[in-house]
Length: 117
Image (tube, rainbow, N blue to C red; front, side, top):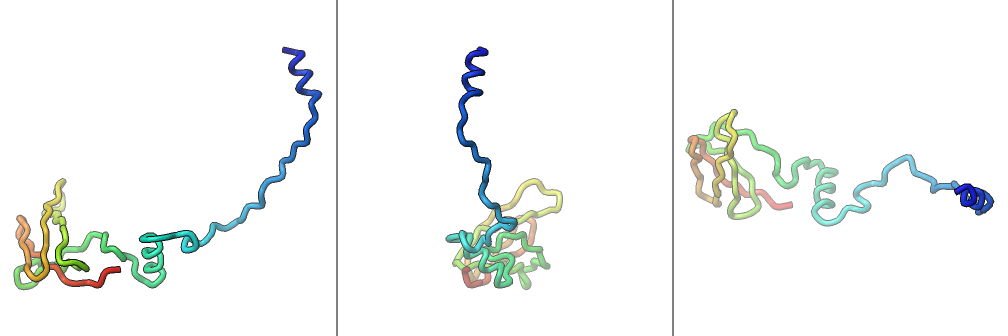
């Protein structure tokens, strides 16, 4: 073992520890983003923080005369209603353009058109 150690200690190879120059800042995400991610970033720069309507909408009065307005760029949309504050399940239903729909808890929902991203 000592012979191996002495043999390795005699080998002199040039060894450099020079590393790459690191930038102190991260690059701009818009430069390398593509597809939906780029659309989302561009809409956030334009002032729209919720481009795909993924956030939870606060429920309004929800009566038949004044239903909760659900935005959609299509003719139908799958909507989940959390009927009670302590509910552990979500009541799912399909909304179609032009016809309001009532949830099992009694709240009414209606689909309204919003231009897609």
